[in-house]
Length: 229
Ligand SMILES: *Cc1c(COP(=O)(O)O)cnc(C)c1O
Image (tube, rainbow, N blue to C red; front, side, top):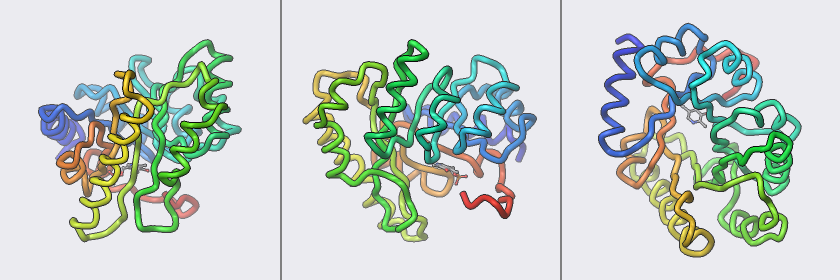
């Protein structure tokens, strides 16, 4: 199937369930992204700042760009002028830098707290206690140029659907707890970014509002040997 055909089918499948499709275009060319764009996609996600910036410069300006991969504080400045959503906030220090760069650019930058739900050592993210500690901190309370609009999580890379389902259910439950405790009067706290090509159906069943889909849309990635994600 072509990228356009994949896109149209996926978009219809998830949008009829009120879920937003983030087209994950990491390692894919500007041409390939353009193909999805021409078929109607406007939201793209990248996992490195370098690729994101290079592609943003070359592609139409009505694209909504999301950063979905680990973000180093010293690189926030490159995306702060235009980024629409950062899915991968995993420390107070990073959030402070995003706030600072938001102020410099006279913007409020939307962010998700990346929550560690997987049973794997390698995944980034905040533990439940760390996320709560962040939201209780004076530093967070003082920030004016960021807005936390929800949570993001990556399930364990496993063939076991029961485990994946439980991890997504945990994230959904945690989201609801945060909503009650910290965002009760805040309608913009509403996003749960969970689900990738292999598990997006399970994620949607468990309450996902955004799925991040790469290979099911663009085809398998050829992973250069110097990258590991
Ligand atoms: C690569 C990536 C995805 C998409 O993965 P696919 O399996 O290709 O759909 C989603 N989320 C994150 C954080 C990623 O790095």
